[in-house]
Length: 490
Image 1 (spheres, helix red, strand yellow):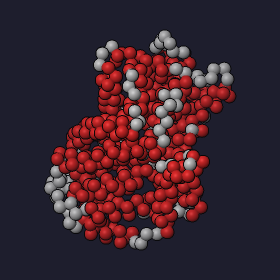
Image 2: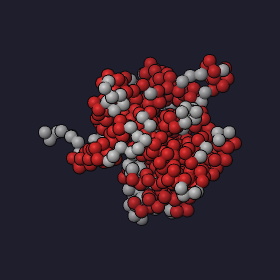
Image 3: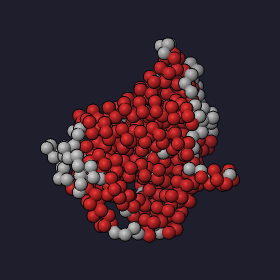
Image 4: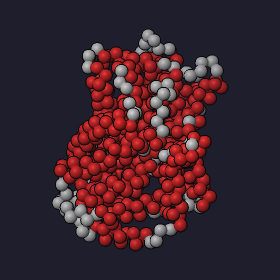
């Protein structure tokens, strides 16, 4: 019995209680069907269980799928159809795009290519502390398009490189030592992660969920492709990556500002890695191919007949890595994070989709929109208010996925009710969904890894996160808004 890992009692009871109260106690509002309300009860209980960590998110999702099938809230009186509805998330192409991309990104760590890229940039730009910060940012943005796990990218590849650099300057995670360079690089390393996550659909797992929610919110009129997302994020992303290290430099200036030995240190690390291997060359070629296909270059050059679906492209990339032996099938089977993502993603997408189909999201957005409309602040003020509430409510969440699933669709629809341009507000909320990860030491999976290394205090982390969140929101709203206007996105 000691080996069992059952539900955690307190968060489980809380989530069950929330579900039962919504289902049986709170009256069904006018304009909402009982089945939509009951699905909301299951959905909110699921989110509560995820937030409370009653079980791992994949396990909670399996229970949610089972409950949707058993209660038949999506298809009353038809058990087989209800089961089909409950499993429908697994047929979503975007889910498999992220799952397969996570599997592909395993090759970065297995071959050592990710570390090689990081040390290469430091060998070129690392003569000053600020240069090291920009080198780490450049390394992460290079890896971001092909690493859908921002935790694997920031915590598994970039953070160990940052620690090696700090250690080389005898900057340890302790008072009087971390101030040399470690604290600064740790704060920069982490705050790069939300920015790069916002720059590509494939840079963090929840981004395709956002694409799905935007499609549902506009009845498929606002369809963000990989290339459109990357193009929209290009200018504000670059500006954020340039400004953020400077802001942190002002907040917590390192005592070591010149690092003439860093390039040689990085070169020594590259020598330890040895000559670039055949596996690394194949991995690099696969990543170039994926970017080529995801950006729609064949279709642009040769016409629409050459268009390759992004998920198909991901399968092609994985197939090449498997056929060449860079990755083995055992590697794929052991990659629990990828399979876990497919499961929880499928469950949450399914529930969110049927909340929309059953009319719950429309009712909620009308209610929120009408409440804000009474304030008389117009669609601009309403959009700003909705964005700020959406972003800073992330203090209450330890999962960006849970936050996006719980709030994105309702807030986006409420903005549309107020008259906000669908494309403009959609882009603002989409990018804010990653930028809000800067706030806390539990905001996303990368946060506890970097914070846990001990280079910063909790106060330093939260102060930096709040300031950087405001700087990023200004950049992405103002610079981004002008850029998107120029592109004709709104």
